[in-house]
Image (tube, rainbow, N blue to C red):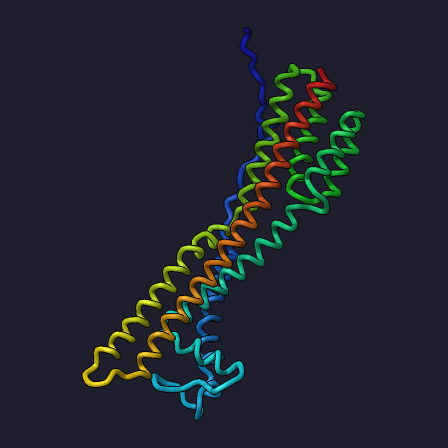
Length: 286
């Protein structure tokens, strides 16, 4: 079998090359420190508001007000120094969840990728590439972006007389792969925060739990009758940190799995769209 070679001029290489853009994650660089500052301020001025404590005095031996939201705020405040860290981690988690939800909702487009692929298949069967391109513009999602790039190359290859059919199909396939390589990292961006928080939040909660239990055992080891107040405070601190750590970790895990499932469905539609284009070209433009 004779070896075929594709002739690529510098001009065409420049026109068809897709280089990933190196950009710093400015959103994360700003969001993380802002969430940390908000978490610490919330702990000091909201949870630690003197109005949440009996007599308006907060301290190691202070008691929360008997009822209302202030009671819960004061109780969480007494969870110790790990609490503001956990609150900051929770805020980072919520911020990244909102950011990814907005982006992936946009990436899914105005209608599903599977529906777009069916419409494109119909137009290509009727050899109406322009109508297929118009459908991609209507979809306005990642699948539409990839299909649009592939269709432009598809249209270019129809009039190309220098390459054989196999080379044209390979050119279309390469265009789709290059565009996909730009789309997928943007969808997965910032998910590393959720996967990290899923583990770190639990460990931070466990660390706070250990500190609380140390205080409890210290109260029990005191000479004479154990200080029941300090014992209860230590156990309370331990449980507050446990609850915050597990709750934050649960949110991160659930949303991480939700986003990865959505990304997988978009990726499947992109793969299907690439297969559709190459098969259509092979069938209609031999």
